[in-house]
Length: 320
Image 1 (cartoon, rainbow, N blue to C red):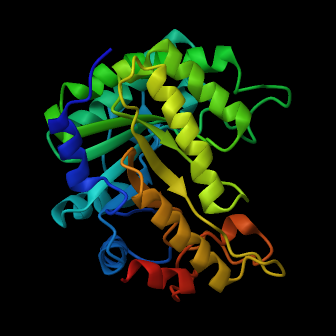
Image 2: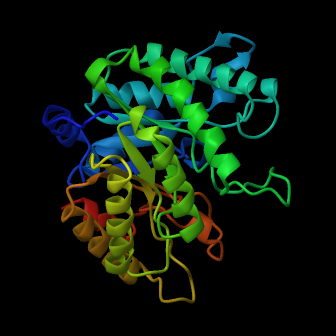
């Protein structure tokens, strides 16, 4: 099991810490251009931008990889402005079927896609997250499917084991690789993550990514993460397991206690709790702009800005 050196921890802390906030961005739902997106990221003092670079957008024909369009434009602008991209490697590709890359053939194809992205950003400061929320059931999944079991953890572990070396060879110390993308406050999700640690996933990555969505208050949420992280470290031969909070946010909900003022207060408490913990290597807030205009749909109301780019109260937290 590899040890995490002081030098590598210092490198991480230089651009991915709880004090250096990141932001999640969905350009498809934003009515603006890449330049304005980067201007907003800079305005609110975010030092990293988390985005999907979907497999189906990169490999549109077998073995043919392209890097163009809005995603590419935003990521290149981010790099030029010293904003670290966190690239989510994921999304199914119709060329290889629907859903997760489960079998060996599809995982090898996915690894090739990941390798081409890594080569494209060779030696740049980039964080890669291998798949987004593998253990979470999606609309396209069969009704009775379970992605929090041992078979699922084994398949995901194998994917990370294959993909990680393909990425590493192009980045040196500039690349950081994280994996997991599960919810530590969900017992079944946490057990799924624990299986990955016991399998030895830390041999291939630099940290575990977590998405701690919950109705618990921030203080209680971090108590759960403290216990989980200590358990993970114990099962990693005592070597520290860093956590990257690559996705977390609080939606406004009309007619509930989740007003703009309450959301601001919860966010402030969450960030404060994270800052007390050295094992937290960063937070990527979800997200920059509301994904829609339906006030009754919480999924549309996570942004620090509304769809028409008006600032919510929570946005003031990041201007300070």
